[in-house]
Amino acid sequence: MEVVVSPCHLLNPKPQVKRKATEEWLEEVIRTKNIKFRYFISLSFNKAQANEINQYLDNQHIKKVILDFFYPNKKPDNRIRIWFFVERHKSGLLHLHLLMEGMNGLEWLSHRSRRITLRKSTLFNIIARDFSMDDVLTEALTNHLQRYIRRLGTGKQSVDLRRTGNIKERVQYVNKSLCSLNFNKWEHIDFQNSDL
Image 1 (tube, rainbow, N blue to C red):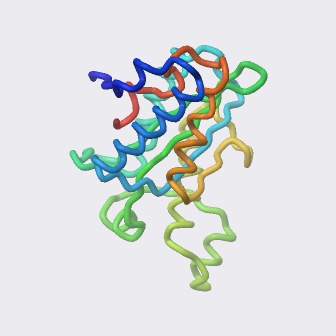
Image 2 (cartoon, rainbow, N blue to C red):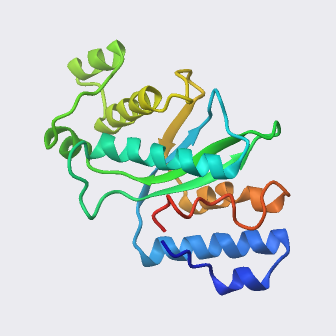
């Protein structure tokens, strides 16, 4: 995969300028590729990596786990797109932020043979017809991630999966490490695993 970096990245070495140029470039990619991010996911690991390269290798597995959740059999060409952003805790260990497209929950549930794990309270809400399909999908995905990503753990803080909200604010948030000395250049973006 060839990484295409905006020309403005090469001209602006100052952290604040680099951050703004990166945010503008990512927003342009979202517009030109017509990406409709629905979810913002934060993953915090029990056994976190300290090295970006090792985290990128783990990201490959994480992407496979997510795509297997949505497409348990054959992966279509027009599958959901995911972007990976690595962030360093003050401890020096890494955690992950993802921007991810979504799909229609009823279509996802009805067209593919799958097993999902839900809490008993969610099942009661479904029976009482007091639920949204999006809530079912996000809970099932959270449980799927915790089951198949061993380093993740099962605590409530290991997976924070929510609606994206204002995409411009999310893009700014995932690029905040450019204003610090945490990463060299654009190492916070996992270009290899992101659908850029």
